[in-house]
Image 1 (tube, rainbow, N blue to C red):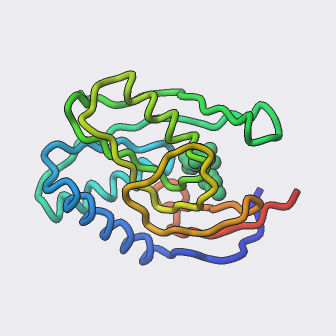
Image 2: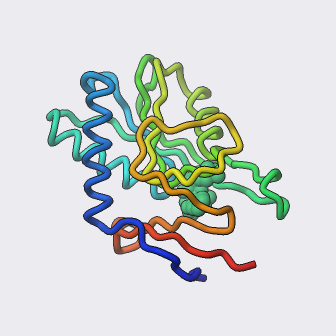
Image 3: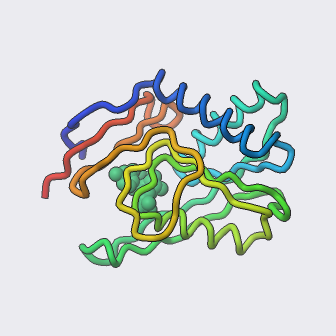
Length: 182
Ligand SMILES: O=P(O)(O)OC[C@H]1O[C@H](OP(=O)(O)OP(=O)(O)O)[C@H](O)[C@@H]1O
Ligand SMILES: O=c1cc[nH]c(=O)[nH]1
């Protein structure tokens, strides 16, 4: 079911520019990319991580390893307090020991998905550091989690939804804000 769109926030050019800026920020913050690995959160964190990886390959001439985590928010109640993240699959086919892991997702909201991703990463290795890159930070955190790299900060109401559509999954690139009607 598609919700009514209140406003378009980013088109393909806007997303491309945000990815380009974040790629440069990642390289600058880490003074190079030798220690980096990417882990995308399914589904849309994975193509975003792939785009960052391609951009960094253009800038630095190095392909950064890319893995994926599959996490869904399982709602066992109508209140957000009972939203539980479930880790379905961990596809990280390389060691993260001593590496700087850049975790990538499309939207950062309560922080529960990222918390589950941090748990999953700590279970599979001992990274030197974990950094977080998101296309959209919409606020309303319920946990003390923040992103290191943000495409766009978007103040939202809880009754709104951020929709991220990406070419690789949805056939087009667009970020919009939608009204949830109860
Ligand atoms: O900070 P949080 O409150 O955890 O919310 C952020 C997560 O929510 C979205 O996934 P969602 O479960 O809505 O599924 P989707 O990937 O199909 O949009 C989004 O892709 C993030 O992974
Ligand atoms: O608004 C939101 C919140 C979580 N995940 C999304 O994709 N959009």
